[in-house]
Length: 82
Image (cartoon, rainbow, N blue to C red):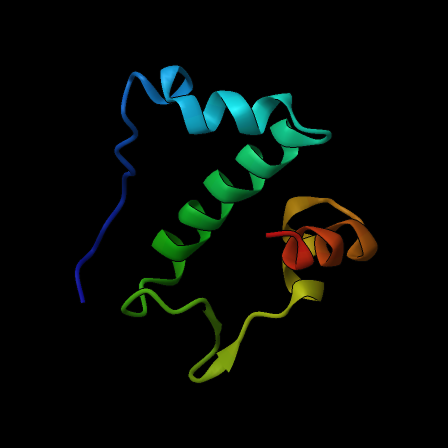
């Protein structure tokens, strides 16, 4: 494992057409925020890309909702959307 302490994001992230389309969707800014927070959480976990709490306990939607300050229902809704 590497000791990663930073996340590199393209300076033109918001110029990307996919991001622009996503931002025009209802709650699109929330999707972007959740995605960036998931990237940040994965850096904190540093378990070969796995989002774990403890040794082998995967994070659940309930954990993500607490960490991100969003309701469980809202996070569950985000997971189901594709």
